[in-house]
Amino acid sequence: MTTERWVRIVAGFFVLLSLSLGAEASPLFVNANWLWFTAFVGANLFQSGFTRLCPLESILRKLGVKSACDAG
Image (cartoon, rainbow, N blue to C red; front, side, top):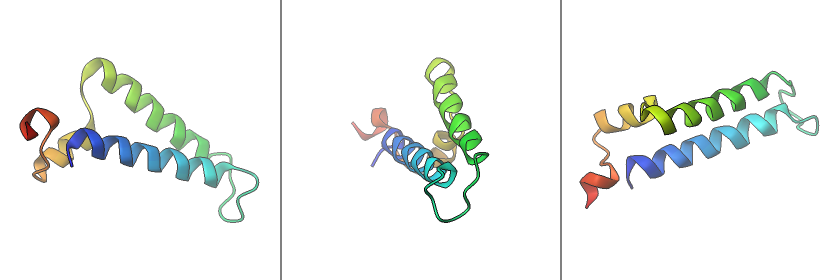
């Protein structure tokens, strides 16, 4: 898989996780402050769309994961 796919998977996972932890129906760790984590992930995705600077993508490249351009 490419770095772009990994970024989408991890971002989606963190958004769903933090929303479930912030929801009142969640039996574990219910706290509205988890929604700040959702906002952080969204803000990071938003800024990376303009700046092309994504910390997770940088980490994945250092670990040897190929980008879509490299995968051909």
